[in-house]
Length: 216
Ligand code: B12
Image (cartoon, rainbow, N blue to C red; front, side):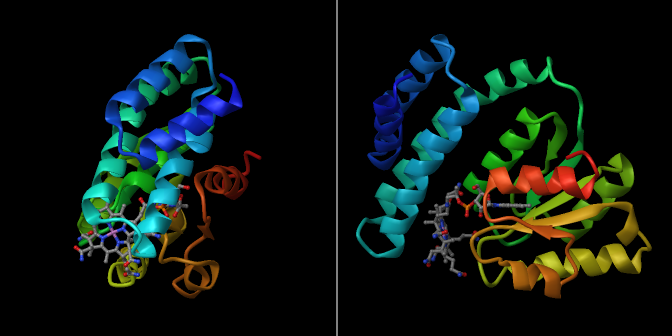
């Protein structure tokens, strides 16, 4: 898919044009385009622009929501292709991911989830607004290599600390590598709460995860 079409894809997300996103994604997958490039250079680029414009007060909430819908529609078409290609990959590790309690932002988490999957991780995505204890139960049950905690608000990043503290108090802290992310998180905060890693985007997150589990 020529670069200009990736631009069209990200512009269609910005415009909140679900139909255009769907047809561009379908067409590019049909022509053998790398699904990860579609996510990163097309959809994610678009939604970041929408987020920035919303943050600057340049667009309304309805436009933000339309952008989010368009992004989701694209991801729904790309995810099965990622899963299909994954079958040919060597398994790298496993991950549980979710957005913490009180927080319903999931666009970034879904990108992280898709990228880990595409790089050979088995991913269990617990969704959004996930209670602390649910993360703990799932870690106990599935024993993943990585626990990913996404939080986008200053009011919810405290949950990342709470979950790490719960892992400690239940004697499970050394059983799993905890990675944190989301727009309100940074490297310093991650270190302060005792996370094993922080990444500001999905690509860096995958690389860091591989390093953390000695697979890089
Ligand atoms: C889209 C959006 C929404 C959408 C969410 C749609 C959805 N399904 O996710 C809607 C409109 C529903 C929404 C609602 C709200 N939102 Co909002 N939202 C945003 C916005 C504009 C963009 C977020 C986004 O999707 N970015 C694009 C993705 C691709 O980026 P990302 O999420 O950062 O993810 C990347 C990285 O962070 C990283 N990453 C993410 N997760 C993880 C996890 C791990 C483990 C790792 C390693 C990495 C990682 O990788 C991702 C991919 O590269 C941000 C502004 C911003 N600049 O972030 C505000 C923002 C996060 N929202 C905000 C607020 C306040 C709210 C509301 C409370 C609004 C309200 N008053 O009702 C509600 C929250 C409801 C709730 N309880 O959660 C504030 C938070 C302020 C703060 N600092 O606390 C922000 C910053 C806007 C602002 N400037 O005020 N929001």
